[in-house]
Picture (cartoon, rainbow, N blue to C red):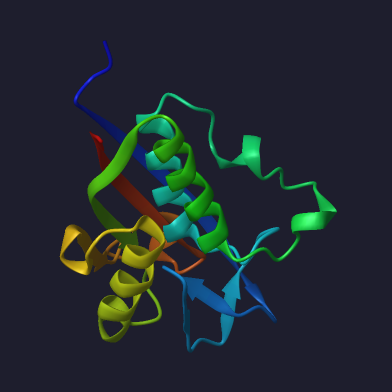
Length: 161
């Protein structure tokens, strides 16, 4: 008998890279530099997709979207998240709610939170009020505190359909 609900966590981190656009939660954020990665490097969405996959007991997004596959270079991370939701659906689960934290010294993310929640909610097939999203700093401690990159943590609740 399968569980009535499942919980997964995810984490991702990307370093800053010049000449790239900054995408977080599916929203392009005005910035002098973006994040380095094979996809659009949306570490928030990557952490969330891993949380969904983790709740299902599946491998992380690198299994489904290898970073050495030239066919997916630059892929929109919302497609990665949507694939995770499809995997949940195939196994009889739907997303109940998610809670996310972005750790970034720069840029200021508060003006973009509602837009990110809306995009993520659409990919997750839930209402925006089921997406918790906070942005914080690393208090100038460590590489994140020196603004060398951005990290994200995610928790996902899946509910049996």
